Length: 160
Image 1 (cartoon, one colour):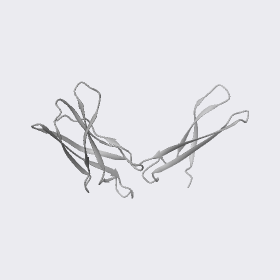
Image 2 (tube, rainbow, N blue to C red; image 1 turned 90 degrees about the horizontal axis):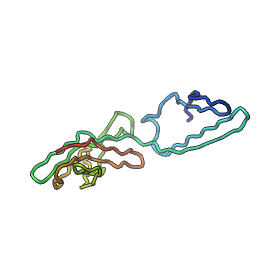
Image 3 (cartoon, rainbow, N blue to C red; image 1 turned 180 degrees about the vertical axis):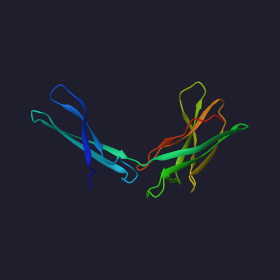
Image 4 (cartoon, one colour; image 1 turned 135 degrees about the horizontal axis):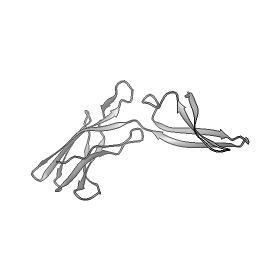
């Protein structure tokens, strides 16, 4: 299957080559299969010189970490949230993503370095929960690395 595209000059140089922007009639969406895609472009200048270039990219389905909550209790922190993914069958927007490892990360106040303090695995509802030793002042977040077919995601920073 080939997608039709429209070629539009985005800038014009003063002579031999122009830069063109190719706009597909339909943007990539959940209906396209995840995996490796190849894009090929061929250009010809006024003198007839032809240049062909190819590039490869990997289309991954979107994930989302939602509802992250961080609660401090004595010397422990409890982090909870939900990992969702675009429905692989395309029937609904997002579905729970079960059996995935989510990193629970901490950044001490005054630093820019995140440290993975533990991991949690999502249940059948995409829900994850972890109890970790409190680390003092700083912020927490959840990180999902992704897979070959699903993109990773990082939650917003949360203060306990």
